[in-house]
Image (cartoon, rainbow, N blue to C red; front, side):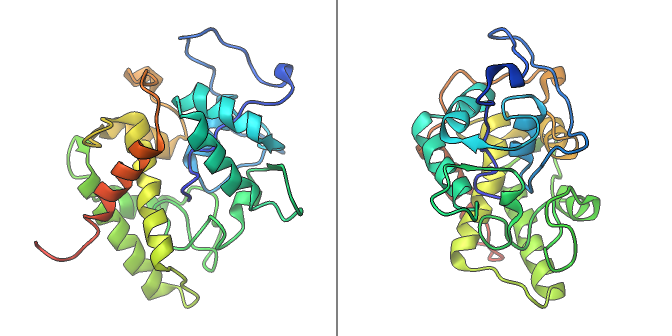
Length: 245
């Protein structure tokens, strides 16, 4: 899972993705044979709705900017930063695009101690892992998922991976990135200031890789900025501690 767990897109060839009217609910189509998906639920969701190319291939900067805006109302400047992170996973020199499969490359954006994926050492590092997710979900102890719940889940994921993965690799830089990852769904699905989010929304996001339109969720009117992401990341990071004070 990644800081770019958000990278959304729309296909460069307009007819390659479904059209939908402004304010309408886009059709959801999970991945089929030949479609690529990543360790990032937010990316996979975007592809499932056609904000990305549904096949998860040939994602350019323009696609990222429009797709992030359409899916999550992300600020274009933040989208550009996230695109650069994605393009850096493409092994082609000076790449101007990436695919969702590129994001699986270990220790670039993808890392050990995911909340919903197995470590690369122990198994498939990009498909949803029910066992890892169950360990995360047990910390969502209220009807609203809060930053403290994500922080507690983050602590257990780190400890579990360190204990059972002999190739465990998790730096201080990764720690900040790992705090940003659960910030993304809280910002998209919940209150931008507190992070409080309906647990049903979060469960659908992770379990089905689907946006909770049917539960009443709608894309926020306010643009999601780097300041929002930084503030929520810090809110979670500050709670990743075993100290009582």
